Length: 124
Image (cartoon, rainbow, N blue to C red; front, side):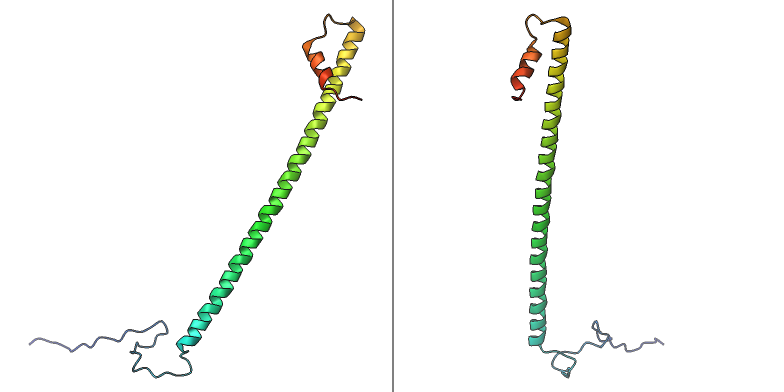
């Protein structure tokens, strides 16, 4: 004798745990928002998301602009310091050259380095 049972498939349950029912058999109640409300909610959230994305893009542009400004300030300061170091080195080399010339007498002819330094030295 074979034992058989009649098995009925269980209805699919949705995310809320309620068994799935076709739309025609479901009773619409206050908990089921109409499609128009869902669409409006979607649109408002989408518009808020777009506004947030635009604000984020503006903020990104502000950060990039501020970083560019700061980068230029750093480069300008570095160039000024480099110019000051080079000018001080030229003065020191001219002073050393004058001291050597004073103690040993004038060189015959002045070296190319001394000539180049004198050409680059700004007028006092």
